[in-house]
Structures are given as structure tokens and as C-alpha cells.
Amino acid sequence: RVFLRAVNQFTSVLNRFFLDQANFELQLWNNYFHLAVAFLTHESLQLETFSQAKRNKIIKKYGDMRKEIGFKIRDMWYNLGPHKIKFIPAMVGPILEVTLVPEPELRKATIPIFFDMMQCEFNFSGNRNFHMFENELITKLDQEVEGGRGDEQYKILLEKLLLEHCRKHKYLSASGEMFALLVSSLLENLLDYRTIMHDESKENRMSCTVNVL
Image (cartoon, rainbow, N blue to C red):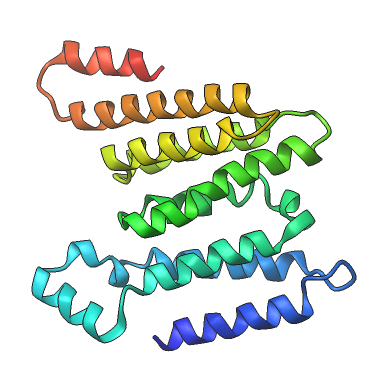
């Protein structure tokens, strides 16, 4: 709780003194995001790993602090405005870590940041595409799922939210929809692959490997 209050102090200072064009400090903002993500993903806050009684006790006394800091990360991202492009693709991995935390409200609040990143790269890169974001998300997703994160609910929500946002966008509707479906099918294959790695059957393992490739 003390750490959370300290991080909240940093957010107000960053917004007040280090956001406008003249005083923007890239390294400071970078440090802030990495600190907030490290706090949110810290093992002592992963309530799913505790017994129901311990979980209830923590929620009653402190609430789910991951949500509080997660919503702050989201707000701080949107505050960046034109500076966002400086954080792509470097921030894709840390934001992915946040969205993979199995808390439904947190996921719903943070997955749309991915669409914002796509849109941002599309508008500011000069290439009218989002290849940097795309490559980074696919690479990091592979690492995270292999590390044991991600689940079926995540796959469904990620596809749903990305499709919803892309379909509303004049220029991203086609390429965005294609990307959302690609990521969803990749995630499905990665989850299958993770499950089957402990399977005795060599054929099943081989088949899953081919699907991922």
C-alpha cells in the first residue's frame, strides 16, 4: 500500500512537470511504466494464488491493488498523446504482462491499449502500417505463454476487443481485423502446444509444433 501511494505521487509529478513538449523526459516515463508494471505483476499481489480466506481478507483490507495501478497505467498511457510513438515497440511487452493478469476488469481496461498502439504506429510511422507493434506482440506473446501465462478467456477477450476497435476504424478495419484473427489463432496454437508438451504421444506433440510454426 505504501508503494502504491508512492507510485501515485510519481504519476501526478510526471503529469504536471514532465509531460509537455518542452519538459518531456522519456527515461523518466519509461522508468515509471516499468515500475508500475513490476508492482502490478509482483507475486505477493497475485490473489489467485492464495486461499479463498486469505484472498477475501486482503480484498477487504486493501482491495485489489493491481486494478488500481492498472487503471493508472492505462490513464498515463493515454496522457502521453503524441509522445506515444516513442514507446512503441518497447512498451508492448510490459503492457502485455499487465493484460495477462487474470483479472477481468483489468484486462478489459488495458487490452484496448494495444489498438491504440496500432493506431499510433499507423498514423505516425509514415508507412501506414503497424509492423513494429505486430512483430513485437507476436514475439512477446510466444514468450509469455511459454512462461505459463495466458488462458482461453484471455484469447476470447483479446480477439473480441481488438475486432470491436478495428472494425470502427476507417483505415484499420481490414488490416486490423486480419491481425486480430492471426493473434487469436496463434494464441490458440500456443495454448494447445503448452498443454500438449506433457503428453506422452509424440504425434500429438509434433502436430501442435507444426500448427505453431
